[in-house]
Each structure stands twice: as C-alpha cells, then as structure tokens.
Length: 360
Image 1 (cartoon, rainbow, N blue to C red):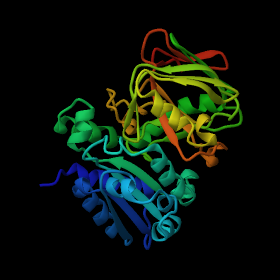
Image 2 (image 1 turned 45 degrees about the horizontal axis):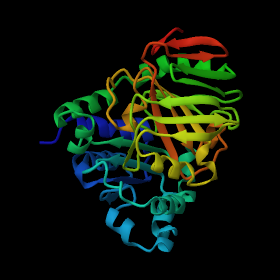
Image 3 (image 1 turned 135 degrees about the vertical axis):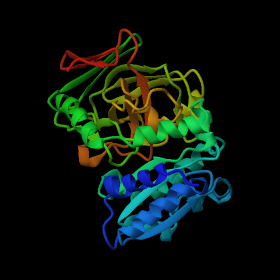
Image 4 (image 1 turned 90 degrees about the vertical axis):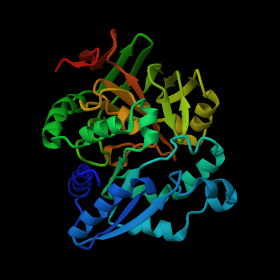
C-alpha cells in the first residue's frame, strides 16, 4: 500500500510549487525507485487536465551512467535534439531524485560531466531564470537514508515532515528576515575560522516557501559579483557534488572570485570543479537556511542547505532574475553551520544572527 503522504506531497508539488494549468505539458522526471510518488504526481497532473510526460532515469542526472561513460565525448557535448526541444518548450518540470546509490557518478571523469552540463546549459536557461515553473524533490530511498545515518522509515518521516508544512506561515516568517537583507548593503559572515564580506547592494532576496525546491525553507540572493572578500571554511559538514564528497573546504575570495582553495579530502575534485569554466570561481548565491523541520545534516544538499541556523554559498551560476550575472555550467551549494559558539551574521556592521539564533 502506498504511503498516503505521497498524495499530499504530489498535490503540493503540482499545485503549490508549479501551479499546473489545463493543457500544460509537464515533464515528470525521476528514478524508477520513486514510482509510488511519480504515479501520484501524474494522476494529480491528469486531474488538472494536463499532460504528464514521464522521463525515467537510471543512476545519474543524465539518464544512465553507462551511457554517460561509453558515448564518445564529442557526442556527449551535443544535446539530443528531442530532449533539447522538450526542455525549451515544456510548460513545467517536476524532478524527483530517488537514487539507488548516491555515489553512482563518482567515477565519471570530470571532462564528461562538464561536457554533459555544457550541452544542456542553454536549454535550461528558463530554469535558471525562473521563467519555467519547476520543482525538485526527493523520494525516501535506502541510499539517501544511509547517507543520513538513519533508517529508511525515519528518513521518510523527516522528509515528509520537512516538506508538508504550513508554507504560508513559513513564508511570512522568512520574509521578515529577508527584508533586513534587502535593505542592507554588506553582509559579513564571521566564525572562528571565517571572516567573509560580500555585497547585496541593489539585490533582492527570494524566499523559498513552496517554490522550486521542496523542502523549502531558505531565502537566497545573488551577491554583487566582484564584492566577496575574505575567507570561509566549510569545516563542519562534508560537501557533496556529483557523487563526490569533499571535506574541509577552505575558500579565499578577492574581488568576488576564489583565488585560493583547498580541502582536507578530495581537493583535486574541488580544484577541477572550480576550473571547469570561467564563471566557476565566482559566487552565484548566498542562501540562509530556515527550515525547523530539518534538524540534522544528512550529506544531502537539498535538505542540508535549509537547516535552520546555516548559511550556504554557491560557486558558479547565478540567477539572472535576481540580478545575478555570473555564468557557469556549475552551481555548487556548500553549507556552513552557524549554530556554533562564536558565529554571527552582520548586516552593515550590525549583528542579526548569533550562534544560529535570530536577533531580529
């Protein structure tokens, strides 16, 4: 018997996050392991008099790891015309991540991953610009539960609790904080190993409360591209990207770009990613985690970046609709815990959060 919470989650994704309308063509993408949720989503889409167009994946975000590894690199760099057309003309996209192995892409050479990302980058422009209604979510698989150090049932309970919230109330709460950032010119992030300043002058923070990511529970914006100065160390949590786990990341910024980078583990992958294109060493996002339903780090960025009392920076692509001008094929969110003693966020020199607790 399917979990009844799948129906609730499907309605949230289709109606609140995407707002499917009659006649829309909705790509519903996900691993075969997510079939119970995918079926519910497609039935809800049908109830909205719209087309549900399933895209089933195996192993990686590019359909199949074996294809990704075997196809000639030159072919990989050219988008499939059918998929390109679908991405450029669909009316909505719902993507469900349900991995069998969260490290499935760890052995894919960086050149192949970069080629695939670059091939579909133009077709995803509507996603980056938030012009296409879309949402990404996860389905509770044993692999995700193992990464979180939890049983599958306990992880499922956490996932549904983090997603099935009163998003109207959460939006109002986060909006109060976001408005303070909108009114500020400079943000300073301070911790025992960190002192980083960046500018938000002229930029607006966006509240994620039932939008493109589920679970929601953050507000985020694009720092002024040449403004980041100082050092930040992501020493509390490992950063996971494209199946790779990198620990102890240290980034030093000058003029808005990473000029020095190191890591305690997988430093080579970090440096390869930062050198993948011209924009990869720039900042695309500053995000503030605010979801009280996420109470622990899970090696799962979709959740970890929303932990209440954390911040995250994304190296790489920015959001044009939020004023961001940095362009890259990557967008890597890296999370820092500010719930520890001696940490704070300042706006124009005034502390607004200390040890993870809001002062406003």
